[in-house]
Image (cartoon, rainbow, N blue to C red; front, side, top):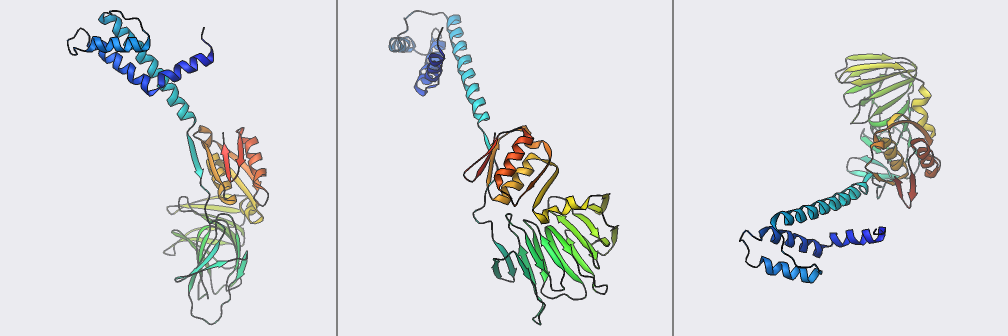
Length: 338
């Protein structure tokens, strides 16, 4: 019986390009013998037999077909094994680290300014009103004091536009997630526009989350808010400890534990029935690390998971590995999932 190494050498020999070419030539020429399509077929067979050490003999067509079939099956099997191994080795880049991911930028007109602090205060002043846009990178969050004194906490990846001085309506436009602590001013409503809805308040605390690929979600901590469409038509009212999702003008409300919704302000990242892929993307983006894994069905498994993003990435990866029962490790600036 051949040893494992002998079999490996035999397989590798068969998969060698020159050997495959000779085998294909042998099979083709063997099938042509007796059909009168190649006068040199016998000579070519002699040449190959002499070169490979095979004893020359005359085969009938049935025997040659059996040889051809056996060789074909063997080659197909070996090719299938190679393709299976290649599939097993297939890697997916779930998230790619960004070259520049730690800059908070405020844009006003054609001018962009990098903010090096973790919070700023916008003073009204007497200058003409202009709109500014603040962009928060995936590796940070940010604290902003608006011209009226209202406070805003912007989560990672948030983009918010606001005027340098408010008028009759205090309006801001948001994409991403933010927590608002609004100064009470009944004569000047505060409006957060997200997609095709407007959250209207007087003085209250609430959380808004809006990503273009998802529906807006508003969670009320204190006070009361109205949810309107962009034409000003009221869609719903929210009271403390209520959360609402708005999908094509239809509002779905539920009671929630608000601390779970706003814990991100304290650096706590909480996932509720999220896919492993979504969790890995969030971890990769916050720590700006690439995430690479096999194309595995476990990426679609859902988990309840929580970690402190102010702590080291090793802590988050270790906990996620224990929960998912997968081998998750860090090498250099990449998270690998096996």
